[in-house]
Length: 84
Image 1 (cartoon, rainbow, N blue to C red):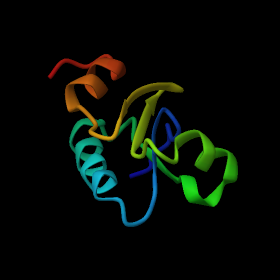
Image 2 (image 1 turned 60 degrees about the vertical axis):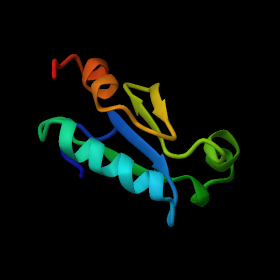
Image 3 (image 1 turned 45 degrees about the vertical axis):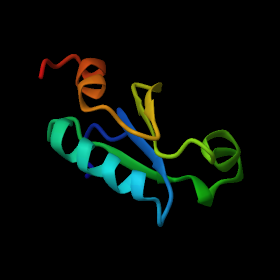
Image 4 (image 1 turned 180 degrees about the vertical axis):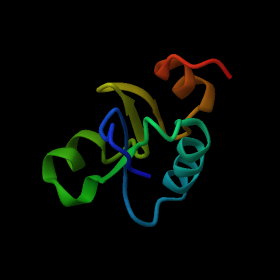
């Protein structure tokens, strides 16, 4: 899940979230190994919980939100500059 370029792709989620489970699968499938991705539990930080709490999972690429609730693989690929 994490590699030297941690932080370029971030999944904001929480435990027990079935949509977060689906988002993890999408990221595992589309984010290249040399980019990697990082997961942040919004419930560990009150600011993140206030910002993302109702929208998890939220995915950002280079600090730009590219999806929430249902994460679209093609949208993540485009944000990374890759073609499907």
